[in-house]
Amino acid sequence: MSFETVYEVRNVSKRYGSVVALDDASLKIGAGEVVGLVGDNGAGKSTLVKVLSGAHQPDGGQILLDGEEHVWHSPKIALEAGVETLYQESGLAPHLTVAQNVFLGREIPVKGILGKMGFLARKKMAADAEADLERIGIAFASSGRPVSALSGGQRQAVAIGRSVTWARKVIILDEPTNHLGARQAGEVLHIIENAKKQGLGVVFISHTLPHVLQVCDRIVVLRLGKIVKDAPASFFTNETLLGYITGAIQTLQEDAE
Ligand SMILES: Nc1ncnc2c1ncn2[C@@H]1O[C@H](COP(=O)(O)OP(=O)(O)OP(=O)(O)O)[C@@H](O)[C@H]1O
Ligand SMILES: [Mg+2]
Image 1: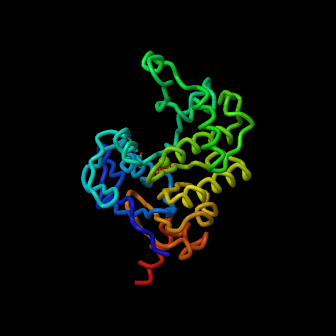
Image 2: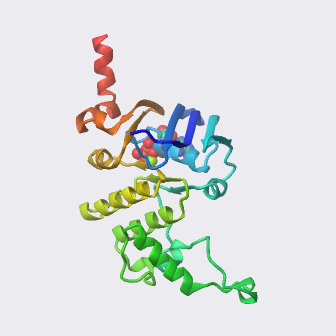
Image 3: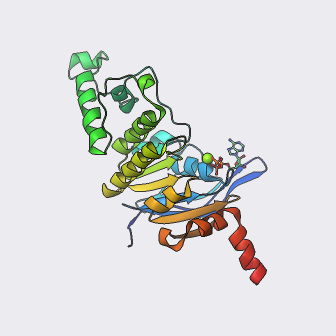
């Protein structure tokens, strides 16, 4: 199945001092395509995420959204253009409710003069948040519960739900199933499938290879800042994927040559 490219980086590089975190990486993400990004600790996955999200400027290379070149001077600009990111350390405000977290930074004022005075449309936000979360497959007893009263898995679901709700073109999920039990991780994978159905381009980062193989259309392997393999998920088995991640497969090929 082929996807129409919605987001693309060409030849991006990023150094931190003497560390080359990303070396000439090129990647395409299609609308309705789930792209897995895998690699060992320190391979450069989060660095690529930060370049895609506008949090870090690449030292070189191009970023194209809908075929148009962009320079993200801040994550806010990328966000407004439709690129939503869930960072590895997701920031939810524990004392706020689920609904307030969904609308954090995007609060809706009430209409008229009261809105100008800073009054917020709390009921509307609560109802909208609940409907949005339900639409993408997250059901909560109440969106009025404070996030501090949720389990780790439920918090993660809220964080992802918030990203999927707002994403218009692309959603980047950096290890969203980390620290989750099997059932909650399954729910996250379900949310990813829903995001795909909505036509979003999804970047999914995880060290849990069966999850990556289950949910992704295509898998990109990073090693030491370089993309060493980019192929349809059906190309890999758990073992060969691990081989590309560790470098064992490339070593074998080199030995054979
Ligand atoms: N802010 C920074 N300053 C200096 N070096 C950094 C910084 N961020 C990342 N690095 C280095 O860049 C390399 C790539 O790091 P990155 O966080 O992208 O890896 P990762 O693939 O996300 O790893 P993990 O699976 O552990 O999350 C590593 O060598 C790391 O030490
Ligand atoms: Mg990382």
